[in-house]
Image (tube, rainbow, N blue to C red; front, side):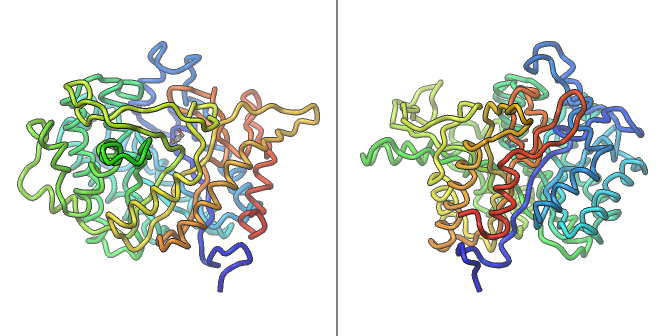
Length: 446
Ligand code: IFM
């Protein structure tokens, strides 16, 4: 029986965050240093030289975050675990205080009726592992399996939804090719090695999960993209397919047992450190795909060259942009969900992130009236409904983000939250979009 707005009763409405972006307490209770601690403390890597040292102080204020989720009546909370709280050096015996923190968080969520969705890796690789080659080094995948096993043992009885990692494209390409994310390299061959080892780490952790016998569902979260073709000309349609390779099929093809896309292998195959049995590990069947969606661009065909190996170029578009410069196109969410459901059929898909940064202003009464964000959420929730009508097995939607937080190389200069965080007092203050999302969750938002 569906709700009045057409969504199934059991559709999950949640919120997402990640550890480095909200926790702070960067050196507390035995936590080790991650590559994001190092990167953010390197001058001029992050706008305004902001760091995650304090972030939203959720390490101490997690009860306030849970209270907000409860006020929303959110069905689930997707958070990530800081690997260096659990294994400060990325290997060996766990740090009990780190485990205790996540144990308290999970218990608090369960008591509040909010299902914990645990993500093992959201880019904050232990610095000690980076010093041994990070994701360029095959051993990091084995270390990830060990860390995952610790989490399964200590918290597996209370968490029903797990994801190995968030947006491995960002970890590989932004971290190793453009260098705008940690560890800040600009090296194509390092990027390709990182791609393979991230996927291997995912597969090893998933196999360990299956072996553990934990009852729960397991997925991988990607940020796929398939820019729409600028025109109906066949060459532009083909350019749109090629433009989607590195963000989409590079990850989903191997996960679905189809190995890496041929076009990618033709160009970069010699870099890929594939060993016997790897592709079987990577294609261990998962329970769901997590899709993070923010925008959609448009492309047309262009000549292939060493600088443009996939032969496409972006074209100007008319859409309004968010504060990130990302084009607002809700129907692109329906398109990417349908594309994935058709090409990589999976039992369940979740939108694990969707949201927008806008230059919020506090009115004299202290309230942020963020109608742009409300429109954004409403448009994308409608697109989710359309996708379901088209037969996409979409089972939930997670808003990015519960609270304003550390937006990576932009520091605190970009606000995605439905709750503002005062940078001086760290007080949480709901914006109007918070009350809109509460209505949406209750079935009155559309
Ligand atoms: O803040 C990030 C998040 O960590 C990963 N997905 C995109 C968000 C907005 O840029």
